[in-house]
Length: 112
Length: 114
Image (tube, rainbow over all chains, first blue to last red):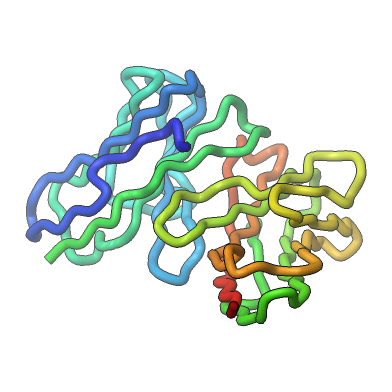
């Protein structure tokens, strides 16, 4: 049973809309991560955070933004969605940088 | 740049067959190595990990993996697969100086025929 929760699980929405993908964890982990995964492809890190008020961009460039106002919450926002943003977005957390990451169920996002 | 390569995109086996999934990484420094599994409709779960010590690590559900430093490899094995092992398997690496960021391979889809 995952202690990291992502909502919505699926989202189909039109171009130009503002979207926020939610990610929450109840484990008190300082480190949180967002990955993007296209079908049949590897996960790419797009954002990470090492604690409250800390956010960094990952290895894959993304037009999304993130915030970390509370330890348990790490939302990802797209200001104006485009079809190129269609993908699966996975959130993860870990207690430290050298410990395994725990993953949420993901959000499958489709932009029409 | 760091990278992880999984040799097989899709593997099809019959039950009781032996499994070996290849994983190679490119990084010269100290690494932590992981195999994650994603069963259909479920989230990614940790299968096993290697941090240090015995290079042969055992994970859940009878899986094991061997770290061969000279070959930059971390292959996953299971002597006898079951239908319930049908899933996608991801190899991942994080380097000590990369701040915990995981680099994933592209995944191997395993289909086990009953």
